[in-house]
Image (cartoon, rainbow over all chains, first blue to last red):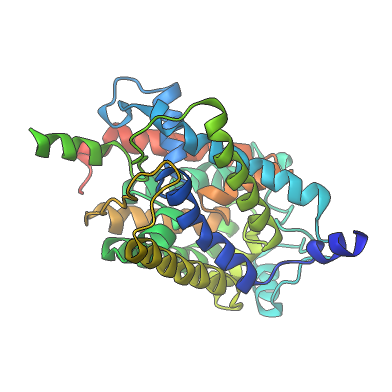
Length: 193
Length: 161
C-alpha cells in the first residue's frame, strides 16, 4: 500500500494525464449528455447571485447545477491530491524558464506556485492587483466573450471537430505568448519586482 | 416557432446541458466524483502550476502541449466512437453535441483570456483546484474572474461579436 501511495505521489506524466482529461469528454456525454466546459460555472454563479436583470444571466441555471457540482469536485480533488498524494520533492522547472523568471524577480521555485506572487501579503499591493485582480478579470471576461475556455474550446470543441474552437484556441495561445514575452516584463517592473 | 426556440436554447449556455430528463440530489453525485478525479489529475500532472503555464508560453517544456494534445486526441477518438457506434447516454438518450458557431468574440475574447492565462497561470478549471490545494489567495482571482464574467454579460450586446 505504501509503495502504491509513493508511486501515485510522483508527478504524473503528460501521457497519463492528457488521456485522462480527454476521457472526461465521453464520460460527461455518457453519464448525462453533458458538454465539457468549466468557465460556464462562472456564468452560473453570476446568474444565481447577481443576475441584475441582465438578459445574459437570465436562464434556467437550475438545469446547470451539475456544472457547479463538477467544479466543486475539482476543488475537493485538489484538496485530496495535495493532502494525501502530494509530491514530496521540489517541482522540476526547466532551467531556462527558471533563469528567465529569476531575471524578472521570482525567487521561489519550490512549490507549484511562486510565493513571490501568490500570497495573501500581496493582496493589497500592486502585485496583487496585477496578478489576482486584473489577471482573474481577464480570464473571466475573456472566456465568456470567447464562449469557452481551454476545456470548452480547446478540448471539447476541437475534439468534436469544430473549427471556431480551433480559432479560439489559437487566440488563447497568441494572447498568452504576447503577455509572456512582451507585456509581462514591463508590467512586473511597474508593480515592483 | 421551432427555429426561434432552438436559437434561444443555443444562447442559453456555452456548455449546455442537453439531457432532456431532469437531475436532482443524488443524481448529481456522479458529477462530483468525476470532478474530484479531474481535480486530482490537475494537481498530480502539475497543470495547476503557474510555472508549467510559463514553460508552455516560453516553449521550454513539452509537458502542457503533451497534456492538451493527448487530451484532444483521446476526445476525438471517443466522440467518433460514440457517433459511429451510436452509443447512448446512461438514461438512454441520443448523445447530443451542440455546434459552436463562429463569432468574432472567439478572436477578441480568446486573446483577452490568453493574456489573463499567462498572468494567473490558470484557466478556470485549475483555479478551483488551486484553491483546493491550499492556495487560498486564488479565491480573489476566482472572484475577479466572476466579476469579469459579469461585466461581459452586462456589456455583451455592445461589444463586437
